[in-house]
Every structure is written in structure tokens, then in C-alpha cells.
Length: 257
Image (cartoon, one colour):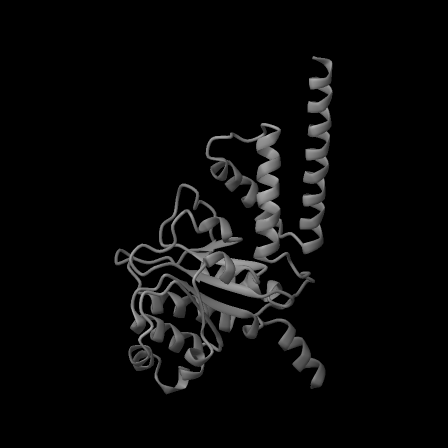
């Protein structure tokens, strides 16, 4: 009996490692409703970034008493990068598809993926503002995107979207697990990407004009595989060696003049 319990626990998403992150939520009622939806599905961590209004009474009105503890422990941040820095795996939500949003999963597909990922990694479910969602400026933080399919009436309010994704995560299970190591968190990755971008611009691999645009494909490449912290350090070491070598070559050319 004990053996079966351990196996069941290992084949489900570790809900305590999953956080709901709201970027620039506009209405406190929506934050409260999100807290209630998260609580319904066993999620206990709520993070808000640059909220427009945190009126406690309006928050509590929609959260109800059952979700009050989520509001008591709610994290509030002024900067998205700082809020996401501790998370090795960030799932962005998008209502729009196409363009740079060609690759995405359904909530059920993403929930199945999180069975493995959540065993050793903190996971952030990132939702954008109620009026237009995440913009392309926030997408580089995301390791994966999730899109909720709908019929002709495609507009979901914030709490509905959270509930759909949270429900799939709550019910997700797998008959087979594989080892997924601790991945590099957002802080470690952003440091690596900054160094990599500087190096690639220096050797003219990517354009000096709008390098962030060219880096999007590089980010997507690494996001597919998931980098460990040690691997991110290796890439930074390679960048330092390339910079050193490029500097030596430049010194040699100048010495011949």
C-alpha cells in the first residue's frame, strides 16, 4: 500500500511548486477571483506584478474566505524580471497565435509536461493584463506557451483562463516518469542571454540593429531543451573565451598596421 502511494505521488504535478503570476492586472476583483480559482485547484502561491489596484476589500469580495490565505501570502513585485527570476520554468499564456507564437501547447498537453518538470523545478504560470494579455516584450521570459482553444466566443476573463489551466494541472497524471534535473532559473538564464547577445553582436553573428529580435530564435532553441544552471555557466564561459580570442585577433591586426 505504501509503495503504491509513493508511485502515485511521483506521477502527478507537484502543486506546491506551481505559482500563478499575474502581470499588470487591472482590477482587484479579478485578482480575488484568480485566488479563488487557484485555491479550488490546490495551487497555493499567487504573485502579482505591477497591479493597478490592490484594494483589500475588493480583493476579498471575490476571493471569499476559503482563498483568503492566498491573498495574505500574495507576493507583489514592481519588476517582472525580478518576479520571475527564481523560476526555472515559465509558462506564458496567449490568446493570440501566429507570428512568434507559432509553437504552443493546449492546457492538457502543458499539464502533462509539468508532471515531470515540477518534480525538481519551480513553475510559473504567467498571465498578462486582462485587456490584451502578454505582449511580445514578455514572451522572451517564457520557456513555453499555452493557448486555450475556444469556439467563436473566444474571450475568456482572467479567472476563467486561470481555472482552465489550473484544472488540467490539478488532474494531470502520468503512468511513466523520467528524471528532469533542476533547470537554470530565469535570473541565471537572463545573465547568460545578455552575455551571449553581446558576444554574438561583437562577432557579427547577429545584427547590431535590434539584436533582441534576432535573439528570440536563440532563446527558443535553448527553451526547447531546458538548460541546467551548470550548462548556462558553460555557455557564459564559452562567450568569455570568444571575447578574449576576438580581442587578441583585433590587437594583432592593429599591431600589423
